[in-house]
Amino acid sequence: MVADASGRVQSVDISPDWFVGRGPAKLGSALFEAYQAVMAEVLVASLDRMDSAKREDSEALPEIRPDDTPSRAEIRYGSTSPAPTLRDVWAKLRELEERQYEREYQLERRLAARSRDERVVHGPAHLVELTVRDMDVIGISVSGSVGRRLVHNLAQDTLAAFRSLYSGSASASGASDEGGV
Image 1 (tube, rainbow, N blue to C red):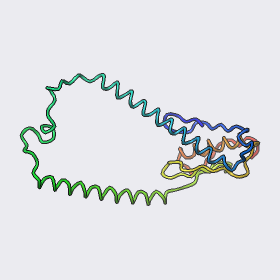
Image 2: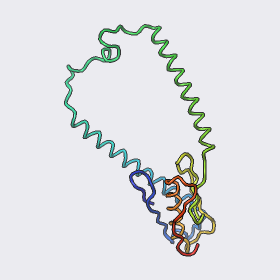
Image 3: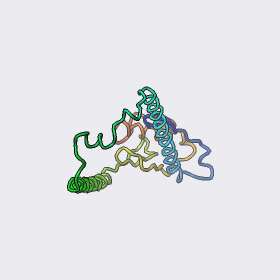
Image 4: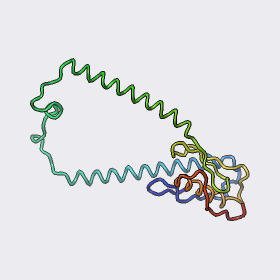
């Protein structure tokens, strides 16, 4: 499986020899593992690009001498503001606690909504099935009728299912069905 820098699957290659001694039952999980490996590579490449951009930016910044840097107290409270009182600290802690409860509540709501947003995307030949939650592929399964003679069709169907996912439609259309599936 090959993906571009944005994480979109560009090609799927399945060897006909894969079926020797394994059969189609394990192919879905193998495709999903390949997908996860490709997405991990995309993330690592993105992090590398971010690190190199950060290094380039830091090299362009002027050097700051320690005597030019204001103290933490001056930055946080201003040079004329007094230090916070115990009452200020307690009020800030209450505010932080309320925000944390709100975040936890919103997270629970999103997780509950996510389970309702799960859907299945098929290729045009219905040989492969992508289980998708919020545009994240969480599973791949393959029809039990797939064998060595349909490997090319399966690869095409898998790619078409991924493309339909990116286009936002529920099922792929317009992909070729070579081999008379």
